[in-house]
Image 1 (spheres, rainbow, N blue to C red):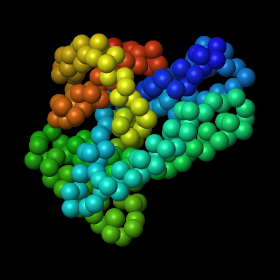
Image 2 (tube, rainbow, N blue to C red; image 1 turned 180 degrees about the horizontal axis):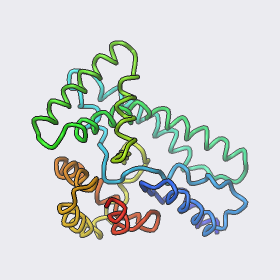
Image 3 (cartoon, rainbow, N blue to C red; image 1 turned 45 degrees about the vertical axis):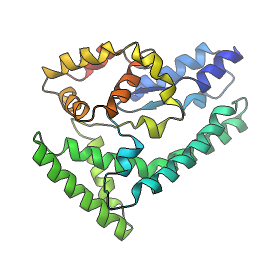
Length: 253
């Protein structure tokens, strides 16, 4: 049982758009590992809520406004978050005190990447709010780059938070998930993920015919290959943690 718990704690990663599915996965693994005496939150660092097909790499986030030295600045934040996550993965959660320390480290990691996530949201919003034409999206991108510049000069991020809020709420809300930023070692799963590459082809076929959020995500995906091919592949290996690929497609229509 101890081995099961360590595998669940150190080797599993999962993402789902539905918060209920995430909590259900935590409960299932909590029961499966017979960790009933352990805090229910021992998998908070590994199972998260977000859209596994929409996200950016560190390089893409840092290069959003080329004239600003964002890349090295954001890289430092991600590196500090990695240190906190490494402590979470190497330690066990056997007592309430262990859980409190883990929660503290997890909060440290989340605080470090908060600004990284905000800038990613703004960059992704430029795509989803920019209409269907490339020219419109380029204009929206330039508008938001100017907003990033002015907000950083003023030391105020309220305008950026408003953009993020628009993206994440509403009838067609998109909650991005930036794999490379949010997980410690998610790229380890790439070999297993290649075995399920066929799922992408099915997604492409179905989404092309639907005028829904899935179609918007398809456009985002197709405009970001090859960088997001890995992201899409990774998202397919977690069907035991979140809804299956086809069930997710049904949620989008």
